[in-house]
Image (cartoon, rainbow, N blue to C red):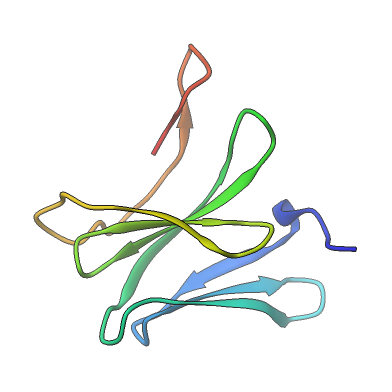
Length: 100
């Protein structure tokens, strides 16, 4: 069985990938591939109110991509920035919503 996704570490790279690591073994659990030539400049883990986890990646094509942290599948791309999002952080609002 898979470990809790909260027990993982993620990193982004200029090679266009984000890697998810098991910190106890040092092994790569998953490699999230982005479009060719696109650098991953920021990563952030998020926990939704229902317990599901997401991994957010900020890319130098000015987008943010969200991946399911259990299956490591792309969920949605968020576009609209005029520059690369260089830092990401999730904050839960007073009403319980998650703000990225």
